[in-house]
Length: 334
Ligand code: SF4
Ligand code: SF4
Image (cartoon, helix red, strand yellow):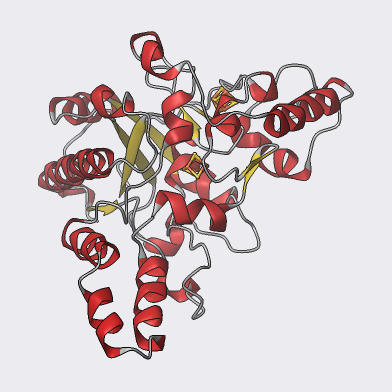
C-alpha cells in the first residue's frame, strides 16, 4: 500500500474505535509473532496463510455473552444458542465497521470470523473436528486478552471464558499488546469446567475436540449427515416420512436458518468457570454442579497429585505459551 494514502493512527485510537462500535475487549497482536508460533506446528494456521500483505497486526475483538443466558444451567438450552448467535452477529457487524474505518484511513483490512473453518481440512468424515483458519483463542492470548484454561478455552480477567471472539487483520503499524504471563486458570484444584462438562470430554490441560463438537455444535454438519443417513437407511416409507417431520429435522432446519445450534451450542464449561470479574453476579445460579461425580473428582485429584510432583502432560507442555505457568511447576521459558 502506498503510504501517502495512509493517515497516522495509534493503537489507542483503534481500540477506542472498537469500543465505540460496541466491543467489550480488544487487543492487538503482532502477526509475525503468530506466524512464528502456530498452535499446531504440524498443521500451522497463520495470518500469513490468509494474506501476504495485510496481516501485520491481528486486532482481536471480544464481546461478552449475556448473563441471563449464562444463568440458564442446561447445556442444550436453545435460548442460549440463539442469544449467542446474536452476539456473534453483533461482533461480525462491528468488525466490518472497523475494517471500513481502517480502509478509509488507508489500511486494507479483513475479518477472520470464529466460524470460518478451512475447507481444505475436510477429509470426508463429518465427525472429524475441523479447526478454524486461525485460532482466535491463541491470537487473543498473543493480544494480551487472557490465557487458556484446563480445557484450552480462553479465560479473560473481565468475563472469564464468557466471550465470543473475532479478529481483523491489517498491516497498520501500531504498538502490540503483551501476553499475560501468569495463568488465569486455577487448574485441577478448581476443575469446575471438567466437573460440569456434559460429555466428560475435558482432560488434563486438554479436550477431546471431536467429542466436544457433538455438544458445542449439536445440530451441525455431522448431526445433519447422520440424520439424512438414517432417513436414507429407513426401509419403511411411512417411518421415513415421519422422520422428515420429526423434532430432529425441525431443529436442523431451524439451525440451518440461523446458525443457532451449529456455530453456537454447549458452553457449560464457560458458564461455571469462576474466573472473571463477572462471576460473582452469576454465582448463585452456577455454583452448584449437578453433573459432578466421584469419577470426575478422582481424576482431578490425580491431576493435582501429578502437578504437585511436577509432572505435566504433553498437552500442557505443547500449549504452555498460551496457558501460562500453572501454580506449582516452573515455567521453563515458554
Ligand atoms: S463445550 Fe460442552 S462438551 Fe465441550 S468442553 Fe465445554 S462443557 Fe464440555
Ligand atoms: S473452571 Fe477452573 S479449571 Fe476450568 S478453566 Fe476455569 S479456572 Fe480453570
